[in-house]
Image 1 (tube, helix red, strand yellow):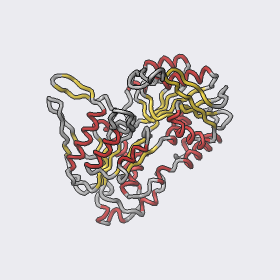
Image 2 (spheres, one colour):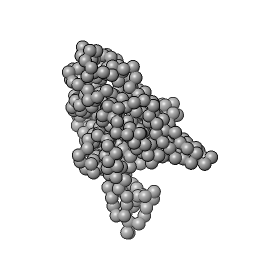
Image 3 (cartoon, rainbow, N blue to C red):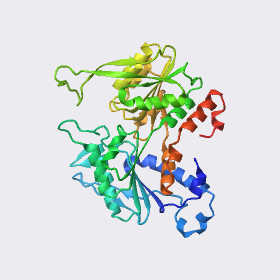
Image 4 (tube, one colour):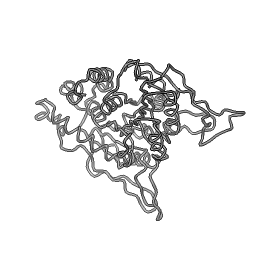
Length: 403
């Protein structure tokens, strides 16, 4: 864990507790295991003797919580233990569609709206007793509806204002579609984290013969919206970058709309020659994956050596059939996504899939926030990326290199 000495000389805000809603139960258990490990390894005699550190070292930080539903589909939140005076971190995954509930004899899959309502129910069940409430929502609810155009709802900003009014102190998310939505709650804590370190670590661990330099590797943005992310990633790796421009159907009066947006006519490439190079495509999410697969297909047609798709959120809203077919056709070589959102169990059987585990990173975030320590200790990944790339290029044993 980075900069452990800072935590050893800092006071916690309050005893730590973590609520993992059913949508994020698996991630919550992993985070809890890391927290137990972190706290047991700390070297501070005050932890054992000072009353201010009461509850600091525990065998479990997870709070017993339940969100039962009535036959009508309505729900309530029940917290099974006291959270009075605790520094509470609530973890939710609004994209977990695998959870179901019965309503009027029918089985419904929970939508992001359902998960968001459950989050508010848990906050309301705290009833003002917690010392501080922090929400960790990796996929920002309604993050793609971050600005209004014409007669549209402004869902993301309204949700943040609603959570602020309910009394949360800090909001943590990952790869927000547009982080400027935090301007809707300028006096509240809003932290947006990216995942380039986890991407490169997972990629290098899965490949033995990558050469990370500008002659052999290129980072590609699949559209203009992800260009900043690609530029940072390429700059840290010391390679060049390029992008695809999504040419949409804006014919006549902009009236051609498919699934709420103008359809993509073609992807136009802007960048250097990619002949014989390995390509990393980096973006914030895979939704249906059609646009990403089309980008990969064009790169292979331009004689790219290998194509790696790196996305923070793998939603796979149309299933894996298209990815299976594209992989069999040779359109891409690996898909790397984090476990910040629900992943279908069958994806772990696919030869092209690599998971970038984020549980240790989130546990570090929680630990530093619980001590009110600077999050720059956790966010500063540039040096760590340089270190792992240097170790990889010099062909050191990755198992001996401490990430």
